[in-house]
Image 1: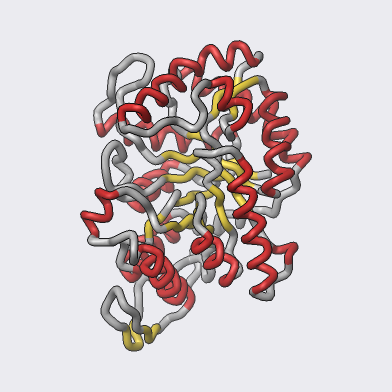
Image 2: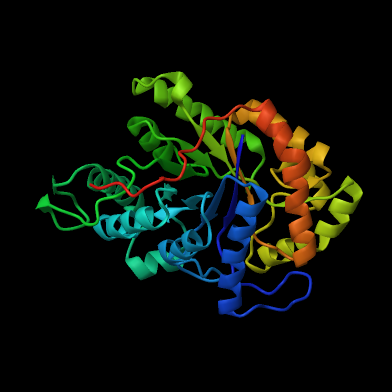
Length: 355
């Protein structure tokens, strides 16, 4: 199994202390955590894209470029790139540039995005976001692979023998399709022979497992070898401690602050207590053995080879955050790597390719 840390770069008061870091300090924390992730042996680090409060992750390629300069080996992910909102040509230019700056360590997770504010900013509606996502991806895919592109669609001006620069370092970048409940994203992934990344955050595992089964069915329908299907999955939060009692009591105020935030927004949480969340959600809070057992149970339903953990401190002190990640790498990751074989990520380029 492979392990990613992912952040959406929320900018909120600390759920325990009530203090909020400055925007500058929050960005520095994100970059420093990516450096720590590489130091501890995580396989990848992801930065989300959102265009509304309480997120400040509106520009993943900029943040990831800075992380690329501070790291050497860790894979760099977007989580997710909202192609329904972006001009595919401009997105291509940003990410092809980042591909070079990172020595070919870039992987994309794409999705339609969500939230009413970003729809208002970009004039994308619930009725057209899926078509925009599909069209944007299919053009982006061609731009990455072809030196000259002739194309026409509904949502941007047509292209005739268009050239885009720079040409990427990776001739065919791997693109994951992020999905929570939508069959549209899953079917698009299966059609193109791409992997999916299941959100696996808000609900119990069963609806996500159903969507993964649908992905595998559509994968075969589109003529691909079943053995080549690749699945990643998220988690709803993470904290590892020596005992389950210590883990739960440390994480309880963080979880309860999250519940209060949901209720202020008028959303009733699916899991009303931390004990319920530990039992039924993808929340990984407990001893190393408990976390191993839970991931293995979810793997039985999802068949995933890649998993993401929350990158942010999320109310933990710097010391507790680091100790939890160290404990994961010392006692959880080795077991899961052994029990769940996974295909390797592409290594960093040893030299810049000339294209």
